[in-house]
Length: 596
Image 1 (cartoon, helix red, strand yellow):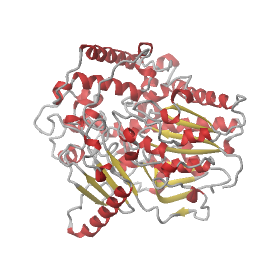
Image 2 (image 1 turned 90 degrees about the vertical axis):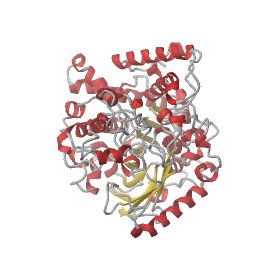
Image 3 (image 1 turned 180 degrees about the vertical axis):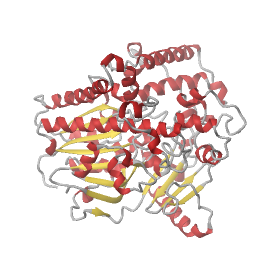
Image 4 (image 1 turned 60 degrees about the vertical axis):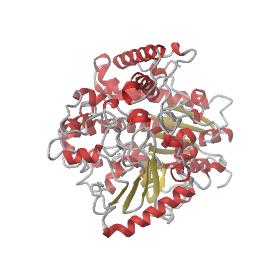
């Protein structure tokens, strides 16, 4: 690249947002998908004025590990304790592209979530030092907050506008800082990371706030989901949160246009994995858990309305953004992630494949929720996705992929209260977020047409899975043991194993494997209050960290029921009760404005 002034860059990265945008309806079978049922005009505008990726996947379908990879440009297992979710600790010695950009002369900033849960929140972008959210974090609880404040602000549209004003004010707060004398000559990088698409959301809000009819989804859900109103409504409510995110993109673009900076700003939009609280989605290596939207708008450089079929790992955005910003790519990224610059500038390819070597992605998973299984162990998986096939290795097939069933593998066992299953992730199968869908499937698991879907969602899995996506787009029929597919199974196994060895994956090259032992696995130390902590409410941290904090206290309190030998101290019990009380009060009041 020539040494022209580096461009401004805005990166919108939504939490738990899979491939849900109306523009993708042009590239999928409308009879078995639903992106055509709603409109996302702002993401579509970015894609139509730039480059849309059809095969973008995350390196791990769980928040912290994915974001560790994204920010460092490495596979999650190369990020130390950033490879897990609960118990994650960021290693400040690992270079990240935002901090490298700052060293190269960029003014950087962020709003909402960049890296969490873990210690310390958003550290890979500078933490509190680079945060701009003076107007609060209520947007992250969009449907809850809007629903509870309708009477106060005079109806749906006026109340939603309060949320959009927050997005605008937080962004303009960052832009004002770019106008300060110390930053005036600097290009800027802004990371916008809303979490409203992360559970929970208000039941019925898709229709009430956005006019989406849940029964329009009838006949369009993946085959592994029961096609009933309760599940359709749950997915519909999620789509409402996706529309809120799309509206926020429009607010940011409008402000850039107002400042005359829209055409001097690269806009990148994506998400960290698929929909939460849905079987085989978030925290799973199937497409619904790992595929994400990705579009890049670069005026004057990327020809409009391009569509790319290359397989892209989201961690490739790290060296790409370094290239875009004329920042030296850290050597830690070399041989791991790969810049997309050759694709971005290949304007001679309007549609299709640019780089023949980009014909696969590798994804994986280690520990998500710490207390999901006895002894706080992970469910280790790796997979390779190619054009027509998905191959998965489950390294510990005797473990439960969605977490321990707590007795619910017995179809005759009476389940916990329905509402508890819908809102409390820890009751059963803790590696799947609590949801109405989860509760419905547990309550109806004995029914003849539900029981097979229940087993697909929550049952144990064989060591190897192979799916022919040409015939089985919803990965329902595992053909790993089918002799007709033996050649393909061996081929993909060999290719995946070679990549994992080349990339020094501890699952293959370490004995014993670090992820089976503390601090990567095993007991998660209970939360202990820090000096000055009394000045903060749980929501002063973030939804994820507040929930994680409360969860650690629950873990300590429940330790005796999970097969552990340690008992929480009275001080820990008291802290648990106090944090739970504050957590409940914050949820009830929905007072989510940050005071940090």
